[in-house]
Amino acid sequence: MQVLSVASEIFPLVKTGGLADVAGALPIALKGKSVAMRSLVPGYPVVMDALKQAKAVADYPALFGGKASVLAAEAAGLDLLVLDAPHLFDRPGSPYGDAAGRDWPDSWRRFAALSRVGGDIAGGSVAGYVPDVVHAHDWQAAMTLAYMRYGRAPATPSVMTVHNLAFQGQFGAGIFGELGLPAEAMTLDGVEYYGGVGYLKAGLQAAWALTTVSPTYAQEIRTPEFGMGLDGLVNLRAGDLHGIVNGIDTDIWNPATDKHLAAPYSAKTLKARARNRAAVEERFGLDRDNSPLLCIVSRLTWQKGMDILAAVADGIVAAGARLAVLGSGDAGLEGALLAAAARHRGRIGVVIGYDEALSHLLQGGSDAILIPSRFEPCGLTQLYGLRYGCVPVVARTGGLADTVIDANEAAVEASAATGFQFAPNSGEALLHAVHRMVELHQNPVIWVSIQRQGMKADLSWDRSAEKYAGLYRSLLSRKAV
Figure 1 (cartoon, rainbow, N blue to C red):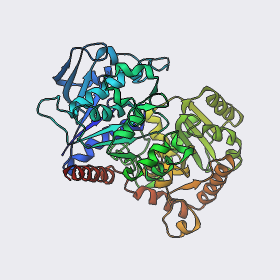
Figure 2 (figure 1 turned 90 degrees about the vertical axis):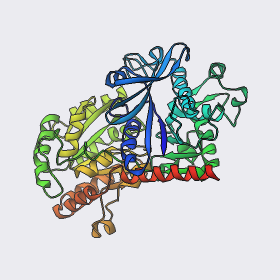
Figure 3 (figure 1 turned 180 degrees about the horizontal axis):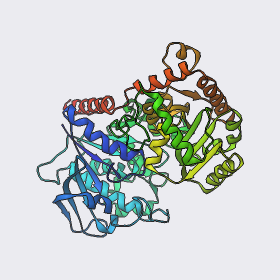
Figure 4 (figure 1 turned 90 degrees about the horizontal axis):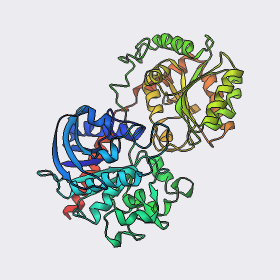
């Protein structure tokens, strides 16, 4: 089966979040399941630099303001189709904004171009290649399904994956005339959304099947609280909605071979984590004692619940825990956490920024990882925590609820617990979970059982890839009927 994936980023070539991890890992995981996935991605400088022996397979004399071509190439084990459009993608900064963090003002044009090309490829614009299924990721690729619907591939099965419904790609009605879609597309049943153009909304409307990155998030986005204005449409499509939890790369995230750790270890050699713990304590200026060490590896934003964390930082220390924070984001939250570290020297340490190697060390040396997100479609850090015996303490939402088994009395007695959940998402509930964690940490037998149970979990992409492959096959069956 031939599947075309369309995404705005792909690991390991370009990454800003979990979308890239999925777009990069899924094609590899599908190889053993009779699914060949090619990935259409923008030709950012980092992507172009990674290509070797690229071959032009389609040309555009004028694509949204400039010449462009589609290049076929391989990189990092991925079968790629790269949209080489220098006027749109050959820019410094991130995929979505300049070096100062400002969004590119022509984002609508850049990702309309990516989607337009995706729709063309679905319709056979690349000689010798016609995908059986098209899989679009998030708003940046969602218009692919609209271009298919109103173009040359209306009968090709399609999947729309929502990694985070909060980001929707909404633009004013004035751009519609430049999209190259027929007039009938600018309707409620098409791309129109509250008088403008909604990219994600268009994808949700046109896709044959919708997926999110966890079963709980699939249900949450059907509610006004989490639906971000799209819950009505999602409920209309509820019969086509599927929640499939992400996996992780268990080769990169492997405590037995991780070169970012001071000492490798396994579920049988957990005592070796002590060297990693000492390295974390040194890096974050923390006291060296036997109190439980909590870590945070996160964007410092409202969505991630970092304001709740900042408000109860004193309470975490009072509960008998230490805290190591790695992240960046809202300046006010950065300042609040740095102030907490100043108040509690040796008990709270903060590093502002992102450091991949340090994130691995935190998972390998901390006792627990705290994730108080207000909403979390899937979440990856709790999966890394499970893999590394860094016990997750999580808000009961989205993928966090689906992947962590709470250490309640019954689960502890059955040796099934893998972490701690708390609800509602409040400072009081968070502190209650921390107190539970501190109490069980004092019992080495129970604590090691929780660690090892988490490390036994199947966190690979194999199971998730099988579910995607099954979904693709079911869509092809519908097409045959």
